[in-house]
Length: 168
Image (cartoon, rainbow, N blue to C red; front, side):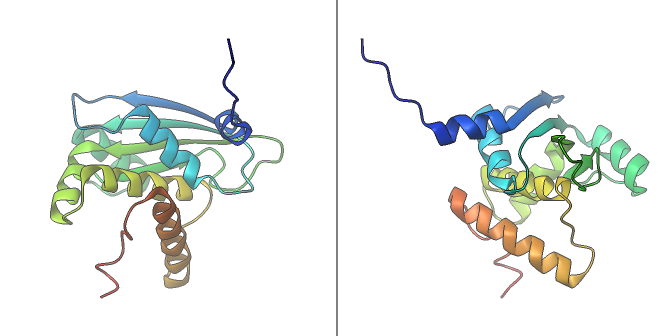
């Protein structure tokens, strides 16, 4: 029997990422494991040789608690990023981090922004992954860099510019 050839690039990408999903909700409208993996991999920057990422899907109460306890903002937000090394590379070690996505907030925003749920989850996953790698949007210059990178990654994935409305 003829054995299928393996794609060495795909194999290297798979070895580069250890992704652990943790769904703490009853939502039936979540992306598949393959979609999460594709989005996280797409957002990994060239300098990241390995990554160990936990992807935690939560309800509003847990999202609010985490945002209050760690960011001192008492409301649930769409995505939170917790990097072991605060986005600074640790020589010889993988990128370690947690992404927390809050289902009710993501669903509400997708509706308000007239985006598909898949498209919004893709954007927020990429956004959160860039935070884990040290990107931020605290000032206009940082925001422009991060938004340009997000837009390019999402375009490669086949999604529209998430900031198109803001640019008009």
